[in-house]
Image (tube, rainbow over all chains, first blue to last red):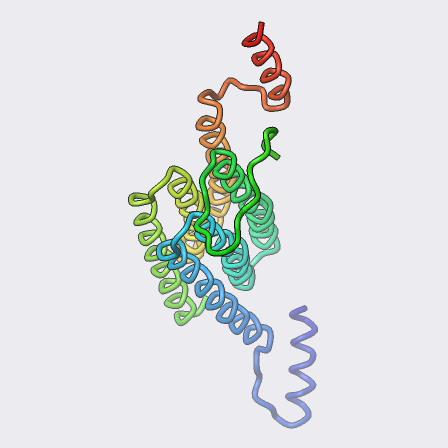
Length: 135
Length: 110
């Protein structure tokens, strides 16, 4: 990859005495900035949602959004910054485990609360009654 | 890593710490058990993210292994606490749960 870029920059240099621009570095920096900013926005929005929403089930919605999209975007930003392929693979592993485990944990908490009989705050709509076998 | 990127990472870590501190508010003041569990789970996820960012800040990215371990421990801990509060015991075989309930009911009837 670096050979390719060196060759490209050499031809550009020979052609018109162009200024050398590290396009790969620019791409990595921009990717990091955008992903990290978006991920932090989602994490902070989810946290404020968990603090301020009125009901357990609505808070669950905010926390679930934080744990998936915000976490994945921040890990993507770190992947742009890492120097070696081992680092990228480790971060991919962390991202994969977060992507598998945190929706599962969120679903388990929601299911346990529903089985324990925690009622959601309701307007017009009424939730279906809890069945005997707990499904 | 350029100095600008270092400062950006530092700011991101600071925002993550602020987010974790706000989540502690829900953890301490949650009305029900499940609110607290949700806050603990979300706090653990944010801890994983903070560990990753912190390892990149101090220039030793090997510490991402610790973040990986923490993610798995967080999930297992949440499931264990949920199971404990659901069944009042950790010594329950979940796959044999329905047969155990049925035998308990038949013993109550007889």
